Image (cartoon, rainbow over the protein chains, first blue to last red):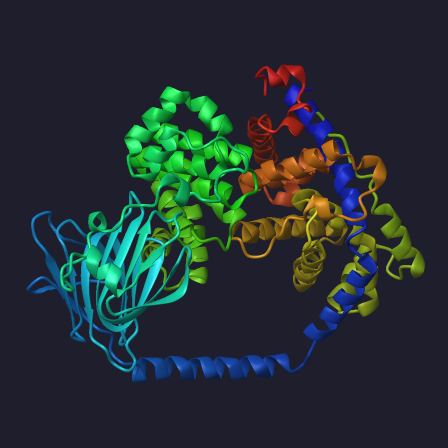
Length: 414
Length: 219
């Protein structure tokens, strides 16, 4: 008998006793029998075939109506004359803008280095995903206009407006400056918040609270002009370490060490080095939950993947079950995917996040990243499962096109 | 692989007694029972449920752990089985066939839970009727950690580990229940066991269950 077998059997016996004790008190088999008999009786209903026939007839009518009456979807062109396709990349070279012109008259300008995708088009609008960089959007207003711009974990719902948006996926920094009209923004820390003409939204990391600047603050931050885009560097700096993480450190913890201040002010590499000088292990053992996340982020932003994993792991080890512990799992997934290029491990962390926070702020992104990770790790069956799940939960989400592609690949393979 | 310890003597026995003693089964043998079920006989349905409900509950609970949706999943097993009872050609295989439906339903439930839809793992801290003799904090922690580790394993590994080591099934039974060959069942059990302990070592409440040789790396 193997020792691992013996350990497993002994533990299993213990678990069986405990589970039986719990379950015997929580499941009423007599009620279950009555429920089954009721269910069986309803299954024998003679009206079912008639209902099915009616449903089938309605379905056929709906399909016919859909194909004959539906309005034509919009089209778009990239640059001067190149027809755009749903799902394909639109990348602006480092030295010039690229303009995307839609058939309804709307225009999206990608600034140098920006990357985006049009993931959905219909007769009323488009769904654009900004992967990185800045866009200048001018959406034509009509009564039924329905445009969506996804920027990282944020959604900007548009009905007709001009705005400028910037997304840095590494630093998770998002800025939105309204030039004309209004939009509705939702995402981590923002629940369906309107942003109007002249206002701006600034996010200095998705685990930081978003800041809304009114007309005066936004225009002074953008140096007085309503036209030029608001640069992240022109915005007020992130709050000081103590303000940015107010309430995040444990009560009674020692005052913030230097690495904390460096990290909060955006000096990521210096922050990690300062923590190392202080003794990285002792920092991991003593820092509060919010500070550990800050350290993990600083290490991640400065490319110190192993150090970031250490910090996030410390959060999970020392604060199990917390929302930040789940967030740490999500970020470890990103580090594994983006820095370690280990999609298999990334998938496990995205899975962990989704198991712990199925409705969490990053659930949609984790679900999408899970498809990528599963696909990149060569596990096509799991990728298809992740894709199906994604489409059920987020049919309009930024990874919906990828999910459909993955499912189509599966069909082609079969 | 060594023979398993059969953990079948369980607390559901009282449920079996309560159910079957309330009314004498009218379909004593499996052939008559299956035939009556195919005919839609409601008495047979109740007999069938009374005979097998405790076994099904035991298998489900050991795969899934204590779970708020256990009663619903248990119900699903019988509804699924009933809808495909006509495909059962060998009435003597009624019990293993039903267990395989239970295993399949549990597996589906795990996959759905992984999609974050429905499962809310029962908080052990909120369980009101935990019997006192076994409800020490350490023992509850060990059970909770076991299912934590199992949740992190691939679904097939989780299922076979629970069937083999928690339920104490024979390898051939596992093979039948999972619809795989004996060789595949053996491979899966060994793989699941190794993966389980690789993760379980990190949990203090589980590490103490490891034999010394395993702790030293002989897993």
